[in-house]
Length: 455
Ligand code: F0G
Image 1: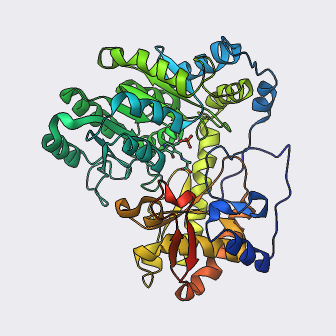
Image 2: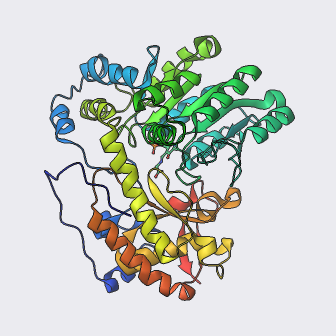
């Protein structure tokens, strides 16, 4: 596969840290084999997350200089970020700023959820699940069938509509939120189709259940829809139009601006269908003031708001998105050629390796995804993240190593380096060993804090 032309050039650069293999082994030991404990300046290529880690553009940097840090009424919010969110979403009602996605989750959980309430989703992200479960809610994922025969089978991030309806029938009034995550991060960065968004919206409406859109990577999701509709239906809708249609179908939405806001920090909640959420809109605003910050900054600095305001304008550029998705597809093709079992097709923000299939000798309770993550760091200083039994415990459906690609940061050569390290690991895969948690197994979101040892 040809690497897509990088449609940008580097203005500011940073030398990559190049610890030796012996140093990396020692660093792993010191970190108790938890990669979140490894200092970032000891990581050669950091594919831990695409969240808040990307480069910013020259325009974003220029905008950040006019960040206004007023407590109340900052023009960075009133004149720049708020209007930019309204243009991006196509919704001109209430917008509430928050410091990042999980701030929104926390505010919404307090308002919408109580003990034994049920939340249904295509696949909740770990912090969303954590925030909702803290309220005593029961969270259930209804992901699309793996090899869906639906006409939009290319959209494996979809909600499984049949399962959703069955659960609503079973849990009835206990279902208090339906959450659609686009793209479906924990399900492999796979996109959600327009038809699926419409179907979820219809079902939620029929049952009077609020439909919450988690829009972290909605621009990437829209690009997949755009490309698919051009290829398959010879039909054309622009990326902004597709994004706005998604927001229009939701009752309310939140977005971490650290992903498709192209920002380092930030987020928002936007309210669409007033009749369904009207009584709660004020509560959302007040809740956000108490937990996140005043309603004209929500935990963001003026600089953050300016960067995100410009980021939302730039992220919808199809030239940017073609490269973004193309870069992930390039790494995907390289690893596939080596024989790696992967989530197919490539997702929007990273490559997900099926560690269970790759390492059948390591059972899920010994964390095959984590064993692979440790191998990538040890062999090449590459930091990825396990998305499996270490992260989700008993709720884990798969055992993945996710290699997430920060935006506008790494090059073709960096992807080639990842593939070269992957080749070395592939040849020695039978020698990899599982892990055991020695401290913090019961911590909430234990993957961030637990200590492990190799078996
Ligand atoms: N929803 C999804 C789908 C996410 O991927 C994330 C974060 C959040 C919500 C929470 O947003 O980080 O701004 O608080 N995902 C990052 C990741 C951390 O690595 O996938 P946040």
